[in-house]
Amino acid sequence: MNEIVRKERYSEQVFMMAISTPLVARKAQAGQFIIIRGTETGERIPLTIADFDRERGELEIVVQEIGKSTKVLGTMEPGQSILDVTGPLGIPTHIGKVGTVCCVGGGVGIAAVHPVARALKEAGNRVVSIIGARNRSLLFWEDKMRAASDELVVTTDDGSYAAKGFVTDRLKELIEPRATSREPRAGESGSSELEARSSKLDLVFAVGPTVMMRAVAETTRPHGIKTVVSLNPIMVDGTGMCGGCRVLVGGKPRFACVHGPDFDAHEVDFANLMARQRQYLDKERAALDAL
Ligand code: NAD
Ligand code: FES
View: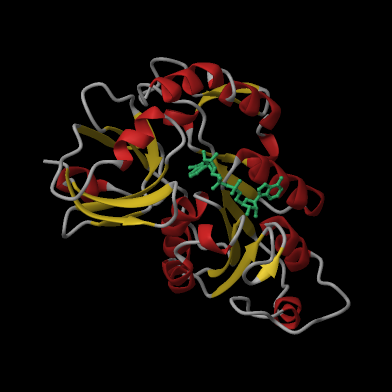
């Protein structure tokens, strides 16, 4: 049970793991997550389902090794089994036919945005995706995101591949086309194309670091574009019991594990979320040092 059937490393800190877990895979929907515990002494780690194959009974997760438990998970190899997999958890992303949707994935968030982009495209929307990483070596799933989208724009912060800048720079261009155009670089569809297709966005869906999701919300807010973000606060039980994942949305407390993880980005109190995410940093560092 819960056997690791494939593993691919994308960078020093990021890897993909495919887990055979038929009961969970059969019910998985875009936007949901699982909580896994690799070993008896491991913490419970919430991870967005990055891909699923219901027939084969497999789920894919993409993990960033940032703490003790994710580092231990990174040492596990195909043939070994994850101690427990709980899920699918959370309310699936609402997949309606709304028109043109921009799916934004930053860093590891690219994995989480992937099933949502695919489902929105399958539902008949025109999906323009923007994915970004700090540099070329940290970028993954360009091929999968291209297949899941009608159009794909790629960015790197340092310009080592495709368009230089943040994902939000390209989102701004999509919303407010520039007067000038330039030659496209490898991996991008071209600014003039981007300008030509800058029709009204009906929905923006974003997953990535919290600062990115806040920047996406501030980019779309003045234009009144409905924007949904998938939040990743600290979680423990994942069933609404512990309160660890409490976020403030529209001034009201919400538990991301049962009321989310998707929320209206314009209503989220990102400052509160960031403060809560930093709450146990010293303990996390100490656990990592001990390892
Ligand atoms: P990162 O810091 O490398 O940033 C990735 C991209 O986000 C950048 O290339 C840039 O385009 C954009 N970005 C970063 N800062 C920005 C800013 N201030 N303004 C605009 N755009 C900005 O990302 P990473 O190290 O891969 O971060 C992973 C984070 O994503 C983790 O914190 C993880 O918790 C989170 N995450 C969330 C989910 C979820 O389900 N909500 C899923 C996976 C990962
Ligand atoms: Fe405990 Fe959400 S993780 S209430």
